[in-house]
Image 1 (cartoon, rainbow, N blue to C red):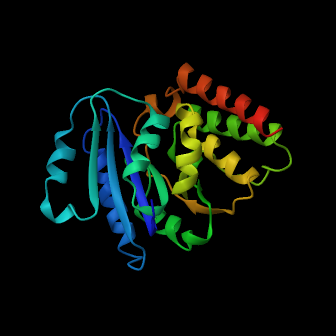
Image 2: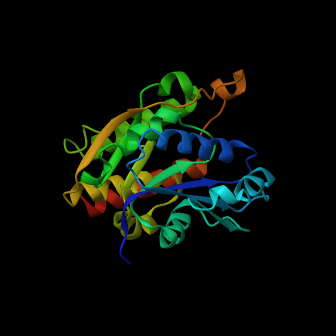
Length: 241
């Protein structure tokens, strides 16, 4: 398949309300500042309940030129979701976007500037400590420390492993199916780096997502999320010693 130069935004979500729509609106606003970049948006519901906000938004005929909707009645997981969704992608680069309205409008503008000269564009969250729950900030920094330690000194330059990221579509098609859940980012970043890919990092910003005490202090990563990451770190270390 021949891919056109441009960016495909894959917005994935499950059991959310209006957040996926706000996410897409932020992408559209961000891309309005870079009209020279061709793009599309693929919204993917990974199981869960049907989302009337998304369905009503998608039904707007004026949006059908740039927005696609893929729905799975049962969750297939992020790695399989990407593996399947990539078959519908039309552009050379694919940006992975959580559908929980995590990133600011300006973040989407920054991530696409000069994208075509790179195999991976890693948007590191400049306001991570301020925006995200403290336990998740700690988990992110622990993972970053672990990856830097295990792949020292090659990956010491990495600033964030779970920010807003974009990759050449062919790399996602090649590597995504090997990842597990929250390990999908390292399952892409590490092979791309060790295969000689060009990587750039740009600052992005999270929307403020700590609305209450519970989300600030008690929102812990699940055991499954932690295990998925550890499985992929070990697998990647065996592959790229």
